[in-house]
Length: 87
Length: 286
Figure 1 (cartoon, each protein chain N blue to C red):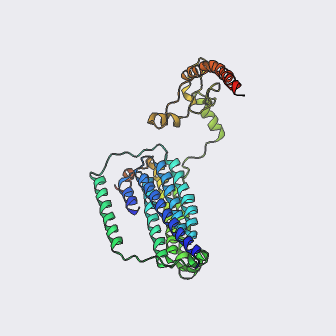
Figure 2: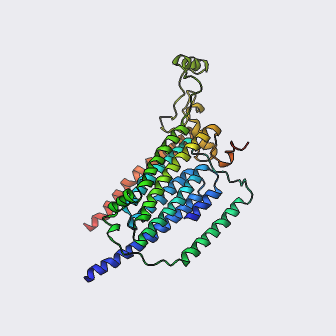
Figure 3: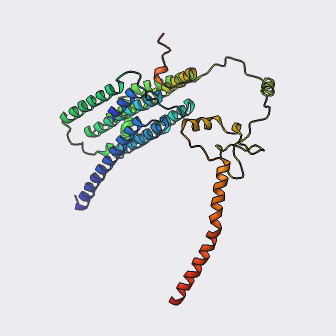
């Protein structure tokens, strides 16, 4: 699932879909954390997965706010058009 | 241990295995569909499927707290945020399939296959022992255990997390804020603009109420011609993009209803005939 998310990040050009793929990768890592914490029999992995979720939520909030700001300025959600910092 | 409880234990692990395989297949298929789907809304819905099945997997792995956090935070908050932004940015924005960087898709596929092989090799070589015996930390005392860990060992990261959340909320507000560059138009200016625009009345509403009551049906003018102004430009744009079908015009539907009414009249006569024949057939039996 991490690999699928990576493919999504690399190939899609709509920035929202790229964010969704990043979420997918984070979820895959979370699942691995929980599974290994179950295997080792302690709860540290679950706590770390919880922190990952919180950080992911914050990241999505800021990322989508940046997206709306860019969309308002450029009327486009494609990553190729976001070259304001280039020149 | 009684034999009954052994049997129940075996059935429980079998059910867990079955649930794991079903959920794994569903989540991986939905993730693949998410990456391959063309429209962003389909991606969001498939992502919801992935997250719900992951929540079920967490619950099955003995992490009920994380399962509920997953449902509330991801499926509830993050996905709704995605959908809101999709609606703001525009649902009908389609991904163009033109490659801007040459060979990007091929390179991405190669990298993905390489990563998959690498991960499979690492996991295959790792000595993964049997799972730890299911202790009380995975059933009843899961929540107290996590709370103890968060507020003792991980108390400093937890506090930093709160600072991060406040910063993120403030940053989102600042980024999404729009400065008003012009003063707000007064009511007098708005009224002047409206009269000067040549159409002081509001736009006609859609729908020909005799046969249809839909927003994609243009209203009929008094001379019988459909009014273009009565349909929302968003719907017209969607029809142009081929996302929605063009609704049948009022004239066509009139013919269709006429055709529907025509066979209806003989249709009423048929059931009575059938009733009569049934009665005739049924009479000798009784």
